[in-house]
Image 1 (cartoon, rainbow, N blue to C red):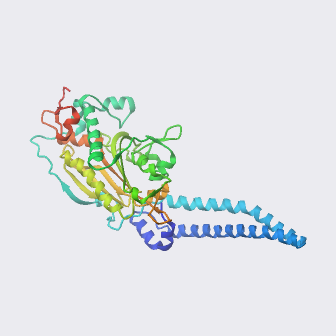
Image 2: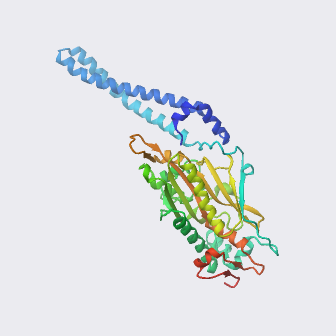
Image 3: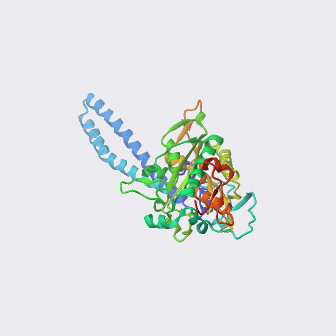
Length: 426
């Protein structure tokens, strides 16, 4: 959601920022509708004022015995009262049209975000760790996993494509990864653990930006609830319609939840293995803060995500996304891409975004500074810390052995009850 005042004051800059994201310049249309809406509001205010003024004048006219004048005023008030509902309905219609127009637009990119069309124009900022040198040809997790408890066939048999059934030590490893990440984000990084709803209403998905434009990417129940595509929805909406105080910031929240995505826009992509599933688990981080703190909070959040990869000794690179590859709600995004030796490439495992006040405006989340009466929209940030399934993929591929087993990273052994290796017979 955008600030109409900013568009009025800086229409050319607003259009230029939209065009960097591949969207059309639209300030002229927005301002024409805004001007019409404001003119109608002025007319409505004048009508209300004149109605009140004329109503008072009726008594004065009658007190003077001016029945003709009183009758004329009464007729005027009646006409205004008849016109008022029409003006109010037109005001609601124009207001909604303007709101919907603003709500359909993506966030404006930060100045230091590179302009580009797609992932090919993202900028690599740094790398951590060196890819392991194998003495054998490393396998893709989809080829290695089935003999270790990663059962794609059973998952597909009961639920269809993009579902997986895990059992034995593999299921335990999946659980261990999520618990390790959650402990790291809470104990080490200071996020508050939350248990959140997995089913939400329309306004929650609207608040974080999935609705109305990206409805096809999520699953909806027959009763009208939506399955969360990420815990970002539940965590961020926990401050919906609230006026917070500045001393509450930064609010840092995290949750380990299942996530559900239809992958409607990804037909034919990553159909093999765990990379792109309809159901997966993820540890999500959300921060609510002030405009002045949000840039530093973004760096802190990204560092928290990087810490998981470093603790697991998984090589990765940090990418600054270009305008064409960022999510619609983000003003700046860092992606962390982990090295997958079985595929011979880096793949996204975390995305950390600063959304500015875009989501807060949609949720009406504000705060007050001490001693000030007016409210300010908060800034919201979200990031993966990390995606559990993709981390499992990275561990399988990076820790695989020539005999088909995988060793357990040292950081996860306590969560595995001392198990140090997963073998074919487990």
